[in-house]
Amino acid sequence: MTGHENIIRKWTHKLEQAINSIQRSERRCETRFTNRRSASCHQRKERKNTRKEIAETNKSLGTPTWNGGWSVMCFYWLSLKLKESTVRS
Image (tube, rainbow, N blue to C red; front, side):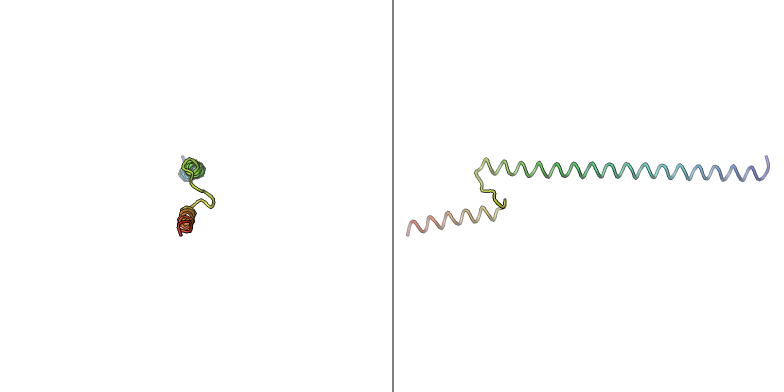
């Protein structure tokens, strides 16, 4: 085997190693992207389910849900108290 053949074999081996390393990196990137995409999809579903559960709970409690917050409930409670105090006086 000549010196040129040794050099060619050595560099061929190095190129094959580099190609394998790049392919492994690509697979890792694809896996990360797929996992991230499915995780964000799962999180969206979870948020949607949570909103549904809150709405169902509010409906079963008879809680007013327009604008959907505690401030609405406080306003509702205050308006009831105001009506009570007006009726008494």
